[in-house]
Length: 614
Image (cartoon, rainbow, N blue to C red; front, side):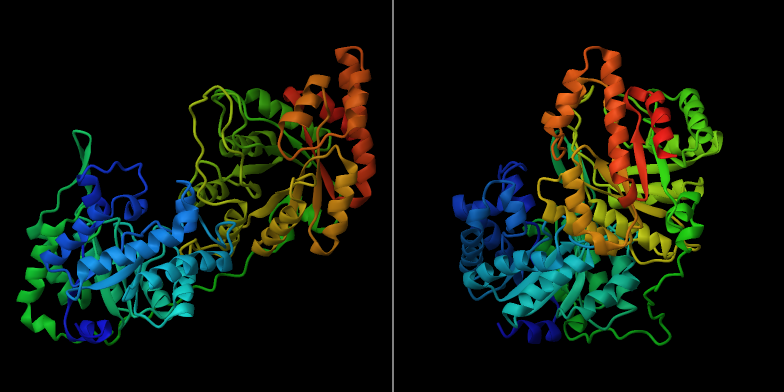
């Protein structure tokens, strides 16, 4: 075999098919770490490689798609990273011998990186570099970066490889059936951006079958001169008697391969659901296309549209976004009251409470997202109804928990269409309790990533970089905790949120004034309005719960002693209000407002504190 790039320019090359599908068919359960099989069942991995080489594959990928530190850590195998990757390269090299190139397979980390997630691009690059170093030691000929959804992340992987060596790199994005990336970026945008990162081959793989991938390749080939690759799944998976089956036949995959090649693809293979028989048929089709073996890369057609990266529209001025935004931008002291959404769907009592708060001078009502306690109305719906029926602005408390990035974007666009302007964006707490102990939590991004999303919407573009028409005008709030276990991290995250577009911050409920003073001193230069969270305690039991069972919340001993001194429930409630009054007096000159929680839905506590506030 000659050098890979010389060969791919001379003829169409065939990549292998799925590794995971074959291991699954050989009895490896899907909850196993497939990458670890390089150490525990190397012969099984080698058999798969050899089957693809015998089928006619010009290139085999190492069994390392998930062999990065983040994914391996979920199996307790992070310390085996180097050994797993080195061994994977050796297994593939021995199986390929001199009949096929060995590509070091690198997949995404499995967590979001900035701007959507908390991991920095530099940290992601370090993770990818660690894996690439081991693959190089294992003897790979090139690298395949595959199944990425995020250009930032694949850019980090690309930078890691290029910093280590000059081996060829194939970079592949995964898409939906409409051709857009999983984050909604169209191929007319992501393909040129991918090409600018500097890989030798760009393309698409996984997620979809041959037909939708062919349409995506056609759109890519219209906007780039790069060498192209395509590795579709074997159609859509079906569950048949408890087993996942892909129904695209080898013959159909081969016919689609011919179409890929006619659109300029130089590297064609398969992904999930494809087997050595699929690759055998694809290889036969490629070898039969004699004219295609010397086919030049397809140039961009004359007059083809050149993708333009939207720069976004001018955002709405902050003071024009909402009454709350106007007050904060002018330095006015503001009051927000928190009301929990109702159980069921009857909002009449909540609306009446919101009206009463408006009459007493409260500026806005915060509707918390996902409070414990069974079937409660969504915060979004409750916020809309409060604004429409109570005549007071709502602050939509919106958590990242249990929503993916596209779903959050859709929710927020809908909220804006219904009049919601103030949002408080938080990561959210994992589900630990409540009426449904079997409920689970899912996090696609954190509050920093969500702030980036809203800022993009405020500039008239979506997360995929596409125009949405008129920009949204969200007034963006975030959370900050003065008693966080790691205050340095908390401050750094607040700084990231501000860089992402946060316009005000609400603290965790305050009891520890010393911690609050430390926070305020350290963020003096941040130039963002701070709203202090206030919680009028009701009982000693409640105070002890907050002090001992809520992570990251600190209740000083003197507060607990004051609550213990109350001899009756009425005295405890009064003492809690007096503590809250003292906290408001202590922080008033240093913050631009307070957010008062209404414990157990009682508004009398809020009303009594309004006297102190006003």
